[in-house]
Image (cartoon, rainbow, N blue to C red; front, side):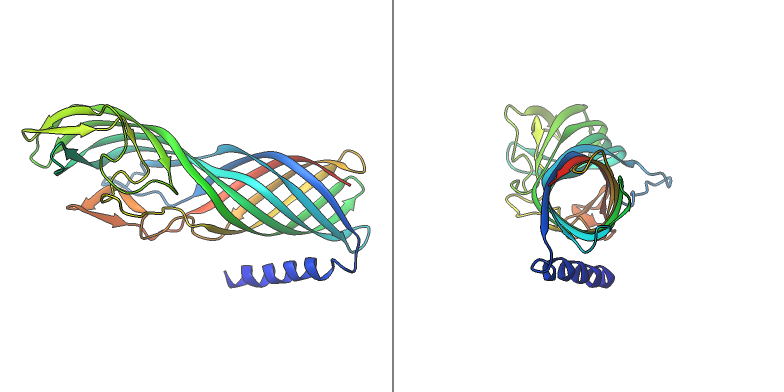
Length: 295
């Protein structure tokens, strides 16, 4: 990270110090992000990896500020609204706390088949050095700082082959997932209208039809899974169809941990009623395609 800070300082200083010395040109760009998380998958008891991360599409739009040092070299800064995220799937043994109508929490274990599309929207500021190696071909690379402005997830959870802590079988059920990572609070049974009713250990259980992001956490606990700042590096190229119109491709690699390790819990196991938290590093990875115009 120290190298990132050094390179960022150099590029930002280079850009802003040249504002008065060079003529600034402007432009805009829009396109698609194909993003995923680079994350270490948990291992199950057999050493398998029940977690899978794959690419999730999103859009980007923003403006470009450019300073030319020569007709060939220069520096650019962009301000982008950029959707990133991932498609996450889990299929394997897990756990699920359930709440009775009297407020008692019953710990259960079973098999989860979970699919979740996560969309994280950033206000990204990439700064790049570029070079026109040909009249129609530009290559660039640099650093970026992103502020997470919204975060959500949607999907479905299927819970089967489940048993209570007294080894009483639990009928399978399916619930939708509606995660608002900034707004949701902790609390079992906090969301969902017209809950599904089950009888477990001689008590009525309410199973919501929809689960919030922090369904498993204590009631009203203030929880944030994703960190608000993201740092990364990028490199790409642009093909100019004429003097101003261009098509481009860019790879963005995150350097900072996306998730708060004090919230990033294991999905496979618990220690009795306590979560096991993961200290692994999850980072953004995205491939960006775009079209733009510079004036």
